[in-house]
Length: 295
Image (tube, rainbow, N blue to C red):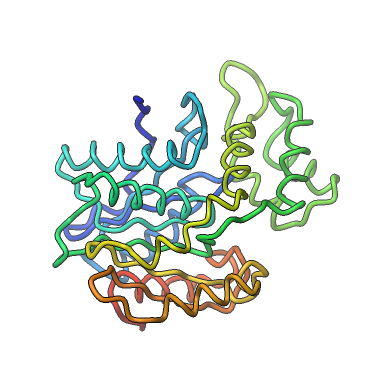
């Protein structure tokens, strides 16, 4: 099935390895620009690119079905296209749903032998999952409440970004969420007012699949190919990591697995929005994952 190329933007060109950052649901690549830029500035000559997932940001108009597999193949298609243009992706860094999509891309590449994501084992692909659960993850009531509210908003939304923020505050959402939503709006095309830069139906489809028991990939992490170096960055304050299943699976990942790709688990003292809550801890996690060290 053909896939439209995801919109992406170089944050820092660099002259060395290149990381591709993938945002979470209801976000856009620019949400991670500051993190990517700081990492490259402090760890030259790394370069970075941020991408918009399907039907987010500038990657609108991608046809369904909207599955995790399709979203993962979007990433493979982007990496393949960049590779043909001389830009090798050496690391995938995904937050939340973006991490789950990155994992889907790597697992599909492992199954199919796609050269776009299979460098040799001496120079493995780094996969960094930023507070992304590899298990089945039912969306919280809060997420559904946000989506439900968004679907009641007029299109386009009258006023400016301050008005958008106030609508979310008046509906009882937190200051942090209301402020974050203002980063995901743009001027409506050909009309006055603003429009959100994501499609709620696509997000619901992806999150519904993510919640299914058969969507769990914990078992696949114990059999990654040698060309993958995986780091799970765990926000210790998040409830998703305190279930009996998560604790058991994280313990299994700590065991040595001959012939398999390397796996690290790195804990940070944050909740889910680690890059907002503790930027320094986020940078340390990236350094550990991509450089094998902490500073």
